[in-house]
Image (tube, rainbow, N blue to C red; front, side, top):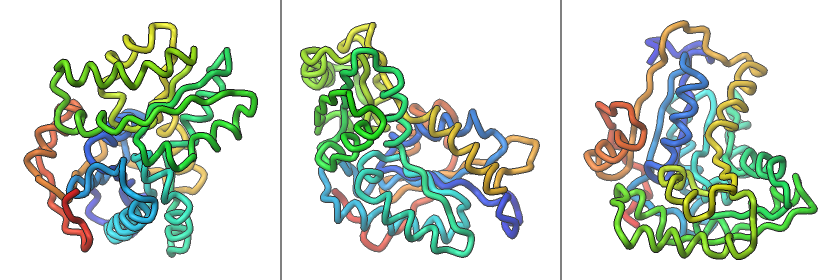
Length: 283
C-alpha cells in the first residue's frame, strides 16, 4: 500500500462482503486493475447475510462503509448481493456526502444488464439468497433492461453457508444444488443470474444441473470493467506501474478466513487483520 495517501489516486479501492464470496469479485478486479491497491473486508462474524432483514443489512453496510472510509478508500465495491439489494441507495447517499465523494458500486445492475442482453428466449433465472430474492431488486433491474422477459427467482438458503464452509463436495451439497436448479429447468430459462458472489465458486456443478446450453451470469468481470471506467472519469485511476497491494480484514475468525479465502482467491493470503465493528455479533 502506498506510503502516502494524501493524493486521492493513491488511495485503495475497498471491497466488502458478508464472507469470502466477494473474493470472486476481487479476483476480477485484481486482473482488470493490476496497478490499484485494494482493501477487502469480510463480515464473517455476522455471516450469513442471506436471511437478515433489510434494516439489519443497511445498518451493517453503513457501519462497514464508515470503517472503510476511515481507511481512506477512494471507491467502495459492495461485493454482496444481499447488501446491494438492501443498502445501495443509503450507501450512495452517505458516501457521496464525503469530501472526496466516494462512489459506491453494487453487483445487481451489471448482472441484470448482461442477462437481458444475452437471453434469447426471454426466460431468465435467478439463484440468490432469501434476502436478495425478497428485496425484489433483481426483478426491478431485469424489468428495467428487459421488460419483455420473464424472471424466475429461486431462494437458496443453504448454498452460501455450505460454500463459506469450504464446500466439501458431498451428497448434501449436490442435492442442494439440484433442488435450487430444478425450478429453473422447469421454467425453460436460457440464462441464469448467479445472485450471490459465493455461487461462482461452484459454477461447474451449477452448469451441469442447469444444462450446458444455459448461460450463467456473474458480476465480477462486468463490474471490473465498469469500475475501471469510473476511476478514469473521476481522475482517480492509479498512475502506478507495478503491481498493486491487497490487504484483508474480517470480523470473525482470522485463521478460518485465511484458510478458506486462499483456496477461493487462488492467491496467497498471508495476513488477515481482525476488525472489531461495534455491532458485529455472531450470526
